[in-house]
Image (tube, helix red, strand yellow):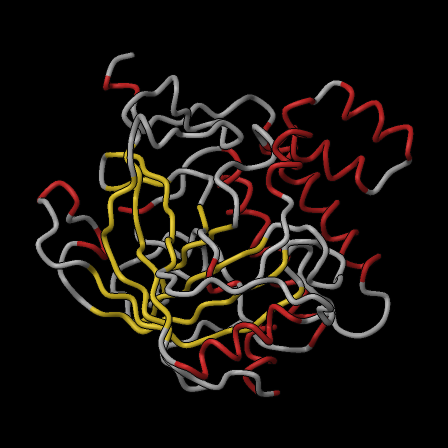
Length: 336
């Protein structure tokens, strides 16, 4: 495969209409799931904690890796939100995908998200599995449709979408501590003129075990206890696309194998020792919005799932914030 095909998108016909249908479907799901109380996210509504962190770009990166915010050794203040993906708030012992959403602050330059071009934030969205559940927006829209539909529709869908079943089964896991999970972007991003995927790799000295009789919120408790003891560090790493066929842009449901292209560390995440389980900070985390399009052009999101996010994330965020009577606001520092 020619190198000219690397980092190239291929948008299918009709995708815009599917994205609009998906946006309305997710909005309806939020309304159905939150008939009393506040309007929560359609995914990742259960937050384990939002915490203060520092994001320090590695010194002496190779010239080819000095792109965007990684062009110089610098430390950014950040907020990081840890969560369960399930749209239903459930006990933490349930199998699920877990999320790590990173928001850097003090990032100069025009951003890609419409109506937020002058914000000083750069977001990275990661989950606890290395592949997305579906191959494209159409398949994801079909999945959401059947998950809110009848048993018969589920049987029909899953009987013809075996890889979706496989990806779901591999990704739905039990975990002991959100601070001890490896996370992945699953979707690709520009790195200057190259394409990459992201991963955050925790530094673990003593791995936690799932409690014998866990309470419903034991993952929050695990975070509280670990951050009472000291800082927590992650490596922020990138994986370069080296083959357009085996490492596709438009199919995040296919793994980019590390044997073909390993991850390389480009920054250190330091989550500071802290106490975070307070009402004001929890409300702040509930109202915080993340989007991969809170981004410099050098790190532009790639592929259909990310194109859908460009429309759906601000659409859902605006709807939730209006219903909850809370302004949409990007933070500029650790003050809340």
